[in-house]
Image (tube, rainbow, N blue to C red; front, side, top):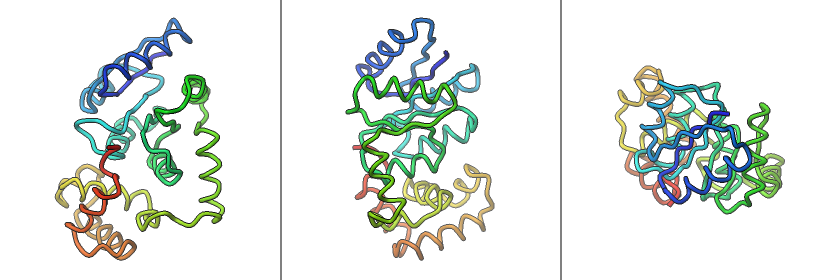
Length: 212
């Protein structure tokens, strides 16, 4: 197994790498402290799985997942996150993640997630699965206005909040500038946020641009 570990905290990288090597001694682990380093590694090497932190210095929140999935759409991505909200995990799965575990989960949970993804499956913890089921069945109402957005609209919202221009968003997502404008209008309509500044403020207050 060849695994790409994208995590900016050295102790976390050391711990995860140690667990993986203990369970799979023949595993090769390439460590990256930044998203850009990980994206470069994808261009020069072959991997079976990516472990991706959502609190990276050069990528805010789910933006890192969007970029990683875009670079390698067929590569399983397991998210390591501080967020334990079902809505956040659901959004990550919609944006291309194959699995989602929080950093507070047990060693056995992380290893189970890796095994599931290696076998071609998906994985979320039992606790998150129960919460997610409540959301999907309507037992729990949407937690926030951005839950009304489609995956594409949500991506555009994150990029707007990160300060990207319409042209930059269009290039990143392979869209026309006109289509980006259409998405922006839908975001405003669905969330009630009146302008770009309000979108950025909303994302910051909700912690959508990072896990801190």
